[in-house]
Length: 375
Image 1 (cartoon, one colour):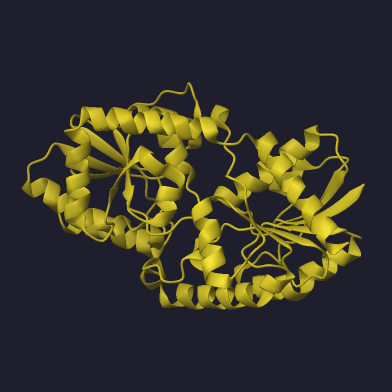
Image 2 (cartoon, rainbow, N blue to C red):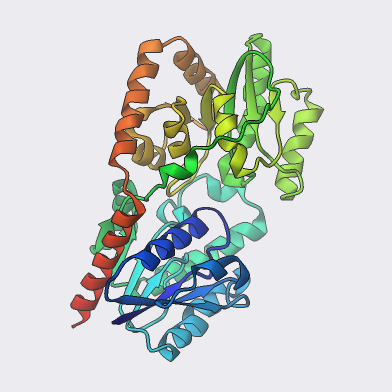
């Protein structure tokens, strides 16, 4: 058996947590030569993933954001050696300073797109933390044997930015069964066209662009609403956005539902007409996949990462220009043939996406490659 040390200390929520959880669930069911020691941010939320081939190693202190550089250079490499690991599978944003063979699953878009305007939208403290992470990311790249990117766009960026040669593309897996649901809930959204932005507040999501867009919609007397799911308690930025909606009198155009439980998400898609996502930076957004699954047109940013996920399945706009957002919305509403073409392209993209069993096989193939390279 080959022992793999999995660095999952950053898998606290969102995509990172989903990747680690699904990877380990598949690992429980397969009969292969790998067994795992998994560094997790806490014991309780991962307890059901323990298995005779999966040992959980809770490291809450190592997972604190400000400690991650220290954890990546000292704490985690020591833990990997202490467990007798043969290989590191790294799901964090920074490589480990480990002399063991290391496979790194890349999903931190700030490193791939260092010139993105998303950098400037963050607070001064957030920018400082990200610049520190980027320094360690660059410094520790030589310790990576095999880099995994989630699409060709990210792989090309990593090659161009850092001269990486050993980048393998493993598309992000999806569990389509998780996107269906029978729970019904009336969100009371009223009449008119309803454009959904299903996201928590993050500065890079660029939802402030909805403010001038909503003013355009009101001036045009368009029967169009923007549905957001922002919790004002999440952050000062979230609270400030909602305050601006109220101060500008846009509450009848920007409808905030607050946080929506996952069980109600399918019902929400059924009550809206399209996805509107003006994000500035992603590695992979599951929201695109949800919209494809629920047969909703996608309107999103004309940026490389969005093209990498959506291809011909979306209408694109300049996320810094509300006029182009408005034009894309009008194009979608007035173009039945174009909508049908994009929905057909979305179905084709869905059909190409990996199952988690296929993704697991691709990851373990990368493990074998890294081990063979060291020998």
